[in-house]
Length: 384
Ligand code: PMP
Ligand code: GLN
Image (tube, rainbow, N blue to C red; front, side, top):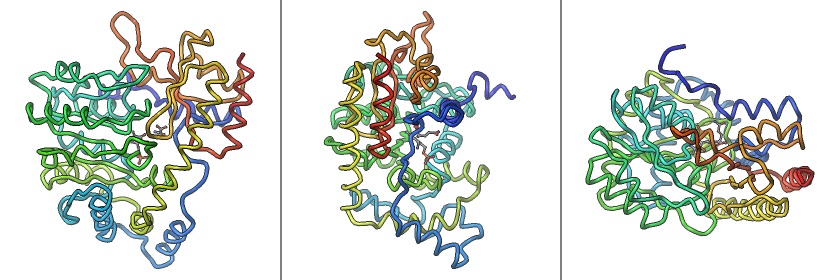
């Protein structure tokens, strides 16, 4: 393979999803819900296919979806975006992130990322010829160390990939943390690529897009996805909103990656975005209950639990049970008790001394039916 793939290996999600299949383990690894999104939205996709919406959509997305995204940004966040120039539809948030990085980062640029970082950030920054500069959110509370963020800026820093609610830690940036990021971005003229795919999955602390802070709308790409909000991860419909010059840089790359994204799913997601507020809040309420169920059970097993403020992932420390390495733990867990989870350490850089801040941390997805969570917990009790 090319040098731009050096060291990237196989994504942990593929490795662990494969292990789940071959061992028949309960899969609390890769983050996807085991119940699909609303039937009326699935029906909308079928209707779109029957109505003949099966050929290429416009590259930036069908107008109905771009307009629905603009309405959503206004309804939930008070963000005003022009559906024609400030919205682009992508093949999942993954493509939005990749195209943003490829469209905005030059070889030799430094890009700040919150560590643990979602694995595609590091990969696409490397593919663009940039260098990721991690700023570490540390257990137990995974707050943003603002001084370390400021200290990580170099003369070559051009962008920051932000992620809140944060995968895998489940932390949601506070107003103070967001203000500090904004001040640093403005002072150093950084572009902010803000991954907000879990924007609706919070359990108390509300999600605030950094684009809503003073001076930030003009330097921020806000990214989200229908996968997480509506439980259609397999549809791969995502989007980005932001000022026209940043959206057009993103689209400049996207047009040569996929050109356009799946047409019938765009029609269906346009309808989903207009679902009433009650849909959004009841989805989050249901997940909060699942979070509490899983976290209580993981605690009973004897793991150190960090209860998340958002996302559908809970983190535990496996050290209290005597395990020294989360990756080894996760690789052995399907055979040992029949459960799959994701180790944090792969979302961290190994330090020069061989240490890794996520060494003993493990992530568990709770976007699963209660009986699946109960079964996983019953199996995990065999650990001790
Ligand atoms: N960013 C984060 C933080 C994620 O957890 C995920 C996984 N859904 C993505 C991006 C990718 O989203 P999509 O499936 O829409 O490409
Ligand atoms: N975002 C999901 C997760 O974090 C799925 C990731 C993936 O399969 N690439 O688990």
